[in-house]
Amino acid sequence: MNGFELRLTDLFGFAGAGLFLLSWLLQAFESRLHKRSVVSIRFWLLRLAGLSSLIVHYFIRRDIVSLLFMFGTALLTVYNIFLIKKFEITN
Image 1 (spheres, rainbow, N blue to C red):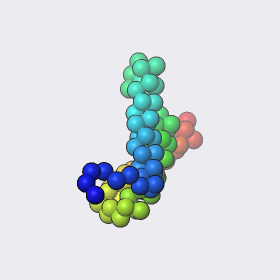
Image 2 (image 1 turned 90 degrees about the vertical axis):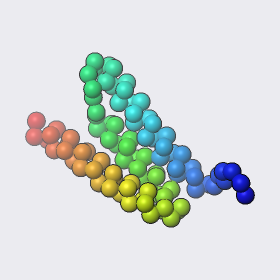
Image 3 (image 1 turned 180 degrees about the vertical axis):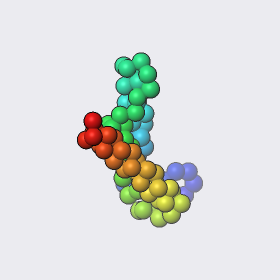
Image 4 (image 1 turned 180 degrees about the horizontal axis):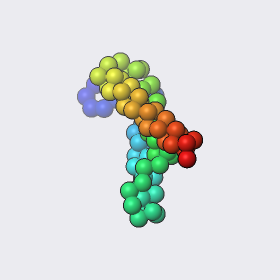
């Protein structure tokens, strides 16, 4: 078949991509609201939700390169959430 083939499992990919876009829109909105660059925990949580959805999508597709990239990105995202929470606890 020529062209694109849409599968039911692609919904995970679309959901992940949508959450990534939403995280950037949230970041832009919060930055505009505060009149400075803001990267809140909400940004990171949306990123983590998007990553989770994309990991499922790439696992189903058996795309090892993207899957490994998403796992690495997920680890860095969790680390950033950890740092925010640690700062909140100590202050």
